[in-house]
Image (tube, rainbow, N blue to C red; front, side, top):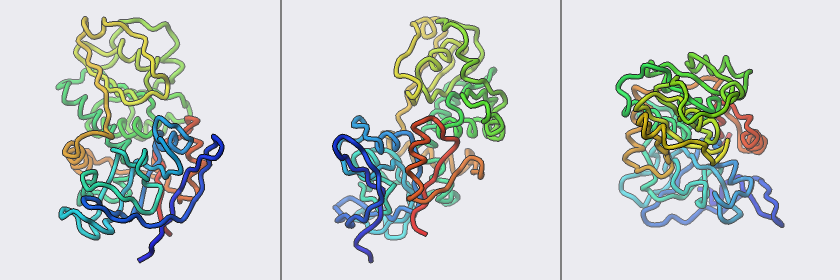
Length: 330
């Protein structure tokens, strides 16, 4: 059994951060932990932040990002997992301060691990990853709050990882979706995912923000924050819900108490990375059954580890469409 493995390692050199593929020693298995042969990982915005030296995500370097991993148990010191079990790990500290899925091996607490559902392939699972669990938690919140959705559900950042999966999941559940995007050329991509209506970001943000605007949506799934979230809050109907899970647009909101006290709006934060493992298992079971949307060549790009750095640059510049999956090995 090889005693080393390959990983993308980010080094900090004189306040500069550089990524390269290195051979690393196999970690020593601790009690209550598992060693996993990672077969697939996926690229998330948080991974790109870690790879670019964001100390709010990763405190010390050298480090291997990758908050998602799917693979097989290599060794286990937990009776619930044995060698060869197919498993998923998303979130918690993986890829933040615990070496992540951009390495061929991860060493993690067994309490972070979920068994791969029988009717879900590894590629399907990793095409969801943390983005998919975040989208699924958002959709779960929307349908749990609203028995009847008279108006469309709006999804912002709709071509990104979380947004594109949210569009697909809502459409799978026969819910009308309005997708907001800054990319006119991605309109057909979003229609293929199931979006009924597409609004360009500049058009959505063309007028002054009003605390209470005309109601256009039953609920919202916001992935970007800032001005767009502020506008969604003002346009969701009475007793509607908006989920919030991102800040790429801005961390600031321009709103008042009016949507909350006059329309009874709920703004729910989604932190899927730290969700209870029991809730993650529930969401994975949903994804593997009635919420299964599959994947297509247009929404998934599978790359090798040595092709990852340019994709990191793309996601940082807002140019990612769909999901980027990293395949380890040959």
